[in-house]
Amino acid sequence: MQDRPISDKIRRFIRKAIRTTWTLETLLFLLRHQSQSWSTSSLVKELRSSELAISGSVSQLVRIGLVIEIDRDMFQYRPANEELAELADNLKELNAGRPYALIEEIAAAQGAGAQDFADAFKLRKD
Image 1: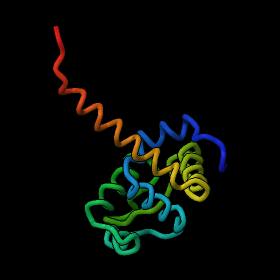
Image 2: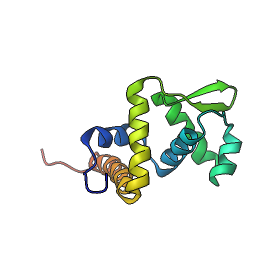
Image 3: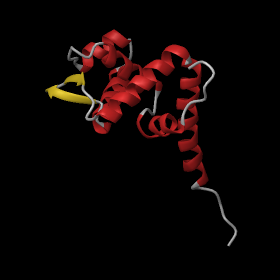
Image 4: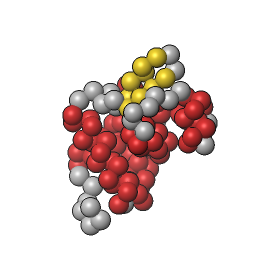
């Protein structure tokens, strides 16, 4: 995994689903502890983050189908299908072998969104 480039499938998944490093960290934590359910406040404590970052990350993971809300404010890793489980496992492997490449990819995805936003305000000659 060290020398292989990040696959286009993983790149697309990162751009669509893993918008921040906090989302990645939240996913990886829930994946490691998939037999347990976690509240937002317990995730904040475990990940040493803010409620805003964690609640946004959990909402994103629920929206894409990697995490479910099993009770009010109680979340658990439970991918909606095998493809999502495989993508999450690929991210876990990539994070273990090439964490900087993964973080760079997340940052590039964020930068692309910011550039698209900035480009929307460019003046065009008609």
